[in-house]
Length: 445
Ligand SMILES: [Fe+2]
Image 1 (cartoon, rainbow, N blue to C red):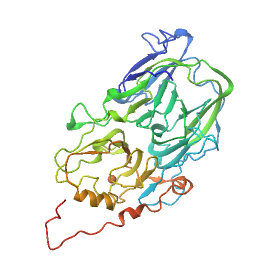
Image 2: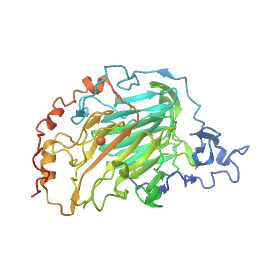
Image 3: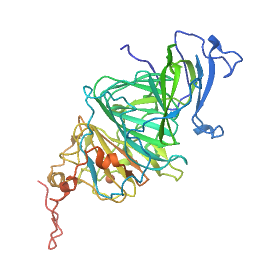
Image 4: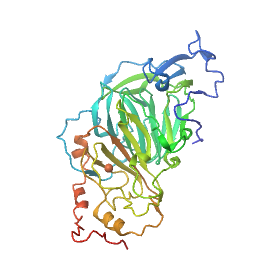
């Protein structure tokens, strides 16, 4: 595969022409009477026309045929995609899943869309307020099928196997330890190269932003220039009656046939694009004296609610870093949270659990459900000598944290058969160390 090119910068106004058609972007206007190369002009609006300039998102696409050139959409099998948050009764327990099983290619071909499984979520698609967490489990490329989501943005976290993603804006290669965001309405098709697995955070009707940095200053966490946007690439490919466009609309899947590849955009400009980001570029900030900063210091992207400081969902990572805090219990603290915390593991071993939380699995600690280090981790960390130490080398855990109270789907609780019934047992050995007659804590080793 020839190396792909990208434009850099989060949310920038970009312009890109496929080099086979120099001058394909109109000069000085968006809608000439006839476009260069006799292309069609089409606007893709990712925000209301009237949004303030700081949040206004749109792109102009110059394409061989407009995307309206398709037969009518018809309902198709929903597979395991759902937005029914009442399938099963609520469950406040700490939940943990073993690695979600990928179907074997030798048994059944499953592509990115047919391999979508909704695990949990909350809110309402029609009022643009909510989110869903999906797991994708696939072993085949989409071929002459593409997908677009009318409901919201997909933040895609590949865990096993790389994704070659064709989009209307160009091609992106996204490997484990990278993420990408495909925003609402953008058509894309995924090629895979092996049995492939990953996580998706879908937010309804809002877009991800970089978090404000406050006293951190102008630089740090995920820096804008490390976000990469594909460059224009087109194919003028006829597929008479044979190309399938799949649409998720109000939570349901629909399909329409068309005669051409949808990746027929010769040039585009605008600030509404797909993008990818390598998690290794995250500049980690942490305590260098004592105690913990809250995990919000690890926020890569946030999808804000209308309440100041409260996210519909934050995407948070726990990257390799130094632990140097003195006189401090260094693993994550015991915690109850008004937010919901879904965690996944891309690779390695998460520091607060000695086993059981494995790459490709997950956990959900729901609103006000207690959680924290397992007993073994507590004992070790309470006694550990506090020298500077590397934490999480070779590891990348992440969290989707939401202000919404998440419902787990029937697939999540039952059909997937990955729920770990013994999760609660990791805290059972926790014992009292209370010494009522002495205030002096036990000296660490
Ligand atoms: Fe927590």
